[in-house]
Length: 81
Image (tube, rainbow, N blue to C red):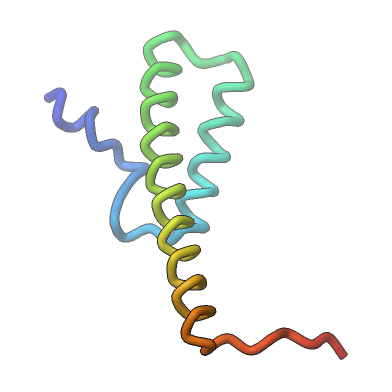
């Protein structure tokens, strides 16, 4: 039973970065409301931390990809009209 709490439904491999960020935002808002009982707040905190870690990993991967493309000169400078 504790295994289901360890991998909450808000964190899964099928979600996009934007969906994870929206879920994290929702968790933050629910916690800021002050209406969650202690157990629910702790569960929300755990889920939020897991989402935050996954989002940070995604951002780091994207940053590495951009750096590699930049080094390979496959990116062209953006010129606004």
